[in-house]
Length: 287
Image 1 (cartoon, rainbow, N blue to C red):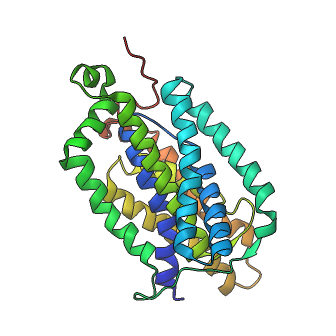
Image 2: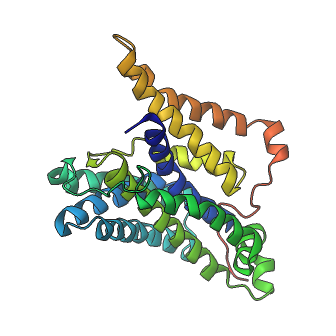
């Protein structure tokens, strides 16, 4: 597998999860448990594929597992008004522990993998590529997208206009679960083709930062994913070409870049040029 293919496959792990989170946040819901959803999707996809012998059934298994966790987050944060940060953190910790425990017997290379039969890429790659303009069109040009943006800006006004805030947010959070499941499935069935405990290794947190850095715009999110996918692969590549390379330092490259991005988006100049969804992170209670 050449370097370009490796970079694109690594980038799509970020892209799937971040696209789903972008829709979440446009509706006013933040899910910082992305890492946990991706872990659940990764393990379930590989385990289901190994048991059934079919990678597509594995993808479905990964999506279902991530959606279950997303639904829990939706119930807690939307229906019960629990802090979205607390709910997401709890889901991440729960998923990390559960997948580490259950995934012991699946540690190692997968028995089943998706075939890279189109220009060296799997069909999941082209699904991700198509989803970028689809998400842009849905959010920016459709009636549903208008409802999502209205709910994320002013849920009270949206409710007064006849928009069901709870239903809209549930749909967005579940779509986010589907996308995180696809991310996990892509990771274990198309990119690394193996499972190890905690193998997402912070990718969910990077995807979360990407959403904000992209200013909630799908095409900018694509370029951000490519940037971090490149950094992820470059770190491993340098280990192979530099004698006695300090591999721990090289593996820090994408995380260091994430910190730099977070510092940048925290500056006053960046915040002035970015319009954050006004209701992001705030529970909505009907009057």
